[in-house]
Image (tube, rainbow, N blue to C red; front, side):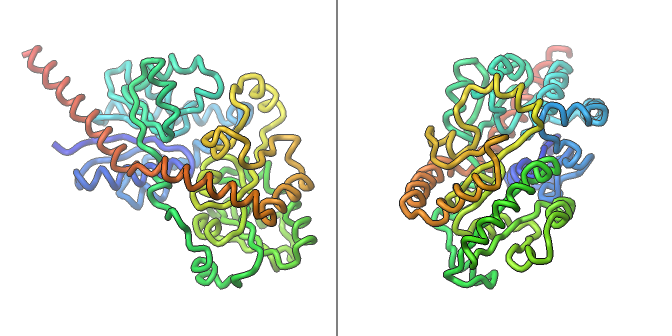
Amino acid sequence: MTPRIMIVAGEASGDQLGAGLIAALRQQYPEAEIAGVGGPRMQAAGFELWADQERLAVMGLFEVLRRLPDLLRLRRQLYQRCLAWQPDVFIGIDAPDFNLPLARKLRRAGQTTAHYVSPSVWAWRQGRVKGIRASVDLMLTLFPFEGDFYARHDVPYVCVGHTLADLLPLAPDTQAQRQAMGIPENQTVLAILPGSRGSEVRYLWPDFLAAARLLRAQLPDLLVLVPAANAARRAQIEALMTDEDHLWVRILDGQSHAALTACDASLLSSGTAALEAALLKKPMVVGYRFSQLTYWLGRWLVRTPWFSLPNILAREALVPELMQNDLTPERAAEETRQMLLDPQRRQVCIEAFKAMHQTLARQADQRAAEAVLRLVDGNRQRIAKREAADA
């Protein structure tokens, strides 16, 4: 029988993971019915879109509160639609504050559930693991160290690695990418990625742009590449730029891989972009900012000294992190200048990033699909046994 799978994916990174999972599922079941919340990549892979993932793209506690009525309305609608549709498995991809409560409610109603991308429960609010255990039949983790935490708390898990590590080359060809983009071989190139969410761009782009202007004054040949996640983010980015900025700042429609491959270093928001830069072996500076109230509450709950994935995976302060008030144009410009020009710091980063890449390349899409299909088979066996007993 053809599998029926519901997926709710948050943000651009979830769209990418979801698209890879869908493609791998369709290799075994081309006619599988797969529907829910996602983005353009998932749609291109044959996903029936019930709602756009942009509705889930909210950052920070108080930012969520402003959008809470719409988020709760969407979650109720998805719960009701899932019960009516009766998929073999529900999969939440990222967006844990939205997906895990939905999964818990569905599981209580008899649905089989999984979550793809572990919340940072090992870093903060560790008590959430009890809710996770009640919400999912399986956790699909990206990073090997996460499995130790779930094993200690009796949560079934499979470490699948990261699909980006499978997609991106171990040795990126910077010169070929520059040639394709018409960039001189010896030009100094900086990639700036201010985030895929509107709130991220609003908080980060003004300081990132100001830092780039300071760098341009020191490095007259500097070219800045800025991949805009979508048309709305492009409009936000261009709104703060002057005509003079456009002479040396190139805005791209998507193309984050291309920008990071072509650059010497990057200045970017925390999250998947930092992992992408690491896998493309690019030294970086990572910045992040929340509303002041969100930051004030969150800092008392965090149990890890780092917030960027490269540092968490390396277990050391490999790349500079500028959080909240530490993120100033002057500080960002100086740290980025060192990442562009200091050969020793650059090489330390590049060697560490190579080791990360080799650890994370595990054929993630195929592993995730195999784990999901095992859940489907297990669910169907339970239903068959129950029906036989009732008969």
